[in-house]
Image 1 (cartoon, rainbow, N blue to C red):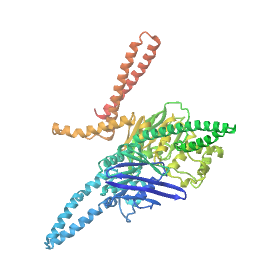
Image 2: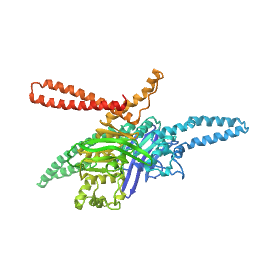
Image 3: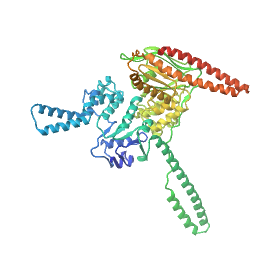
Length: 633
């Protein structure tokens, strides 16, 4: 059965420029489809046409009869005074009507009416009410709210008082609670933390209906979709697979078209050379060759069917890193911070060294952005102190970019930020960040969030820095722009501290994880993949612990570990793994020393390396003893 049918869809907002140019496709019931394209390609326009908010200039978009459509990008206007709880429970409007009719029938039967039709109607409504989960609405609301990190305190707040991101999250929860057949998701993960994103992925995996999603989250696309529709120059391209398949297949198609084009061009050049020779002979008196030359030139024109395939021009810019001397880049000592009587974190002790790349992760509201603002001096700690190395030159990209003069043009803001820069040099640098031609005269206020971030990066990347601090650098960026930022960060060789919910970005760059949770920061000296594996093992142990306890019978329950003790236990597990790795490395080094016993110089180098490893192991053992005491083991 076809759920969505789009035929010859054309839509333009400027004369002669079609955003959608004759798009045709269909989506069958139960499919999971990703809609890709650069920012401004027409993805959201297509969604608005599917929901009836916009009318196409030509063509039609048909939703199967009786199918209920939910769109996450539209935030409805609710009555004044509606709380978040009211908004979530508005998903049960149909159930509420059933309940009201059941109550009315109950009152009539209690008053003495004994019409058999009345009883049959009540039985029908009762069965429908139960089938739609009418008796489990409280459980459903709690489950969705917990999954999307909508706290009890937030559920009591007025919906109108929420931020745009919070409203989107609540509206997503309402949409999930509704009995919806087709989900249209427009960047659903933009305002979700890692926990909520993974919960949404699990929900969609269990959802029985059809899903069409716009997303630049590559992990999300890999886990959710089974087909890709890419809008490029107003027309669709189709890929039967997830994002990883799409990325490989798109490059393969480009190379294939390029080979076809080059083959055709080589043949054309060969025929053009022959045609020129025939014309020369005709000029020398061989009249018959003239007609052959004309015929060959017509053939050449008929061959010019393949346009040269193109790729989107990549931005070519890099961070300029300053040389750094010393080990310590950043040190946090006893750091504590809270707002309105609520403590975000307390007693934080962390150290960052040169060249490290640290990902700061945690649920929304745990204080990640606040910690970054304290490091760059925009916020003051309630207690403790922050020390930067004497030669550290930091640069900071905030989550919400602010310009002192948003009414100024892009070029004027660039010139104001870079004193002594000529207008032509400024335009050259802006062009490297995809601000070209007349675009540089646009006011900054009309730029999208992604474009403002790109402009701010343009200003940062020219500075010589050795500590780069990024707060959600890929938010609101399309995939091409995300890849560009990733290439720029890849080429940067200084220290990096960043907050991100983009698992692709975290996995690529983080060599160390700082996790904010329960008012403290836990240091995981490992990459994101190893961190996820460790957390999965911890979760599995937690789930298996109650079962093991049940088998052993009732025992005296140990006092609940405090926050510091829990952190020490996690650090102890990490320390033990590091010791195991180092001991194995020492054994391998000793084997190398035996093999090099006759090579004095080589043996001396290996001996020095082993001594350094022994010292490192000794330090780890001392730390292990300290952590064992703190963990109560």
